[in-house]
Amino acid sequence: MGVKVSSEKVGNMLNQWYIMIKLQQVHKAKAMRDEIERVLEKMEEDQDILLYFNLIDSRYKMLIDQYSLSGSLLKRLEHQAEEKKTDDMLQYYFYFFSGMYEFYMKNFTDAINFYRIAETRLQRIPDEIEKAEFHYQVAIAYYKIKQHFFSLNHIQKALDSFKAHEEYRNRVINSEMVLAANQVDLYRFEEATKLYELALEKARENHNTLIESFACFNLGVCYERRDLLPESKAYFEDAIKIHERENSIYKIRSAYMLSRVNYRMDSLNEARKWYQKSLSWAGAEDEIEYKAKLQIIYSLYDHREPASIDKALDQLKNKKMWSDVAELTSMVAYHYKKEGDLHNSAKYFEQACHAKDQILKLTEVLS
Image (cartoon, rainbow, N blue to C red; front, side, top):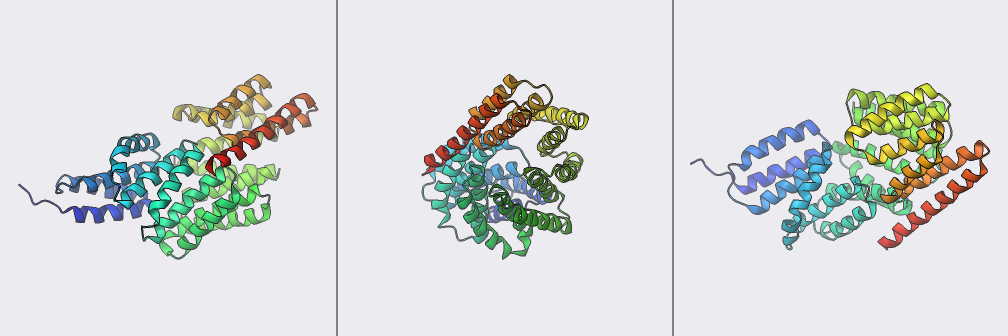
């Protein structure tokens, strides 16, 4: 019978694995996971370490876009994690990762509620980078429900901490892009553009193609919001080149935005090409959100069928994606106004106002 590996040694390995995950070093994280799995077979019995492994594994699965597996694992661990009343760290991870999963599922208020529970445990964990990671995730959740003051407050805390650690320079870039996203919504386009351009420059210097693609995508969004459509199109094209090359799930949203911008520019053949690509990819991933969004732009600019627009909007409303509903109904309303269809224009402006009211109600649930 072989010598048992101490649980303390495995715990240290799990700590290092989690650091690799936070640094978004996918290949190193995968290699370390494989090694830990081999060591676990020889470890002395320790249920806390096994729970720790499974919790970090749920976070790893999010890193590699296996969200359904992550959600299933967290559900299975729920009872066990909540029993650990005296272990702040294990409880923190369970609630924090559950919040991240709910965020991915577009359940933003549920995500924030999990984060609030996690925060009560975080106060007793003396790890500056963990606190920075927490503030980063909370910031993007508040951004999604248009609570810009809270989002800016949390992202600034994350940014200050990440900047103090050279190895987290990629998280600095990500944080600066969250800061820029808030500036876009606050119509501070010049400030946002400078932040995105700086993020793009840093990403290229660090040879981080994924972050480079995010910076390009966000610049595309920023220019579209300013109705600078040729510039917007160019940045979306830069983003999609990376996403197609890397076969990234993010190619769905880049293709959608390329279709949308081309439709707005009356470039129908280009618009239809990217519409078909995005629709095919969204179907393969069962991305209900993007299938609905694609139906909206196709029905608005090509098929010209308001009933199909309403059907797709209902899907987004049912998922309580009120920020997206507000944006899209405004877009539809302005298009009908431009065409002189005042009846449909007024109808969708009214829906945009209703969606914005629902965003406010979401925040009331959190208060």
